[in-house]
Amino acid sequence: MEFSTSEGRLQRSLTLHPKGHPTGGFAELTVSLDSGDIISYRWRADEDLDFNIHAHQEEKVDYFLESRAKDADGQFKAPRKDHFYLMWQNPSSDPVEIELEIWV
Image (cartoon, rainbow, N blue to C red; front, side):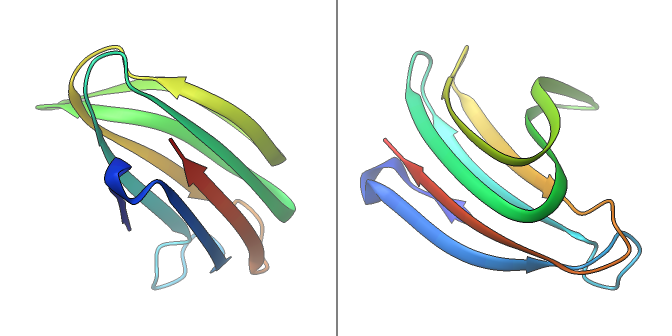
C-alpha cells in the first residue's frame, strides 16, 4: 500500500494472516516524506500486532519505532527525506482484523 501526503487521509480495514501464511502475515504502508514532515496514525486490532516504522538505506534498515500492541495513536516526524514504511505483522496463529488511519 502507498500513501501520498497529497491525499490527506487514508483509512483501511485489513485482515492480517499469521506469520508463515502465503500472503506473508504482514501489511506495509509506504510514505514518501521530506525532512521535518509529520504524519499522524491511529490503528486498532483484535489481537497484539508487531508494529514498526522503518526506512531502508541500501543494505541497512533504520527502525524509528518498534512495538507490540493492540492499538496505537501517534505521530511520526521524518528525520530526513526518504521513503518510510509503517509495518504491521501478525505474530499469532490466527487471522487478525486491523482498522488503520493515516493523515497529515
